[in-house]
Amino acid sequence: MITVFYDGKCSLCSKEINYYQRIAPDCVFEWQDIATSVDVLKKYGISISESLRLLHAVDENGKLHVGVDAFILIWKQLQYWRVLAYVTSLPAIRQIASIIYRVFADWRFKRLKHCQIAAKQE
View 1: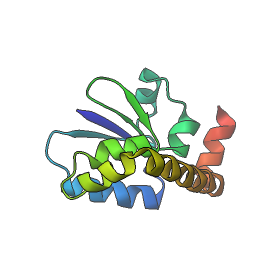
View 2: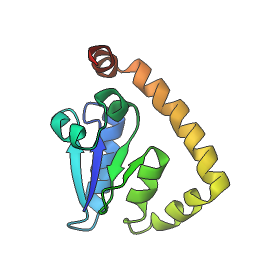
View 3: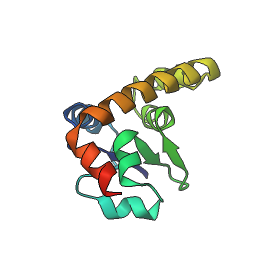
View 4: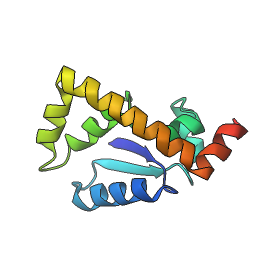
């Protein structure tokens, strides 16, 4: 089972995860809202602020995937999204997508109050 950690207090994040939940095959994902599941982050050595900043997922083998790699892991399991996973996995595309995602993620993190509160508490 793939464990996905997401920011349930972020409306954009929640909408995207809700969509994935609707189309995901049964028994493939365990969805962890970090707003209510902080303790499980410790098991994987993920800080609260990093989990709020970037999407994190852990695959069936316990390997941690962060950012674009987490999206690729999710998309590989979703019908109609596998092509995007493949294209995004190509080295040049992955690098560009990672840069764009990090810029967006940093912007989102800075503008959401609950992210800033969590960062100051760590």
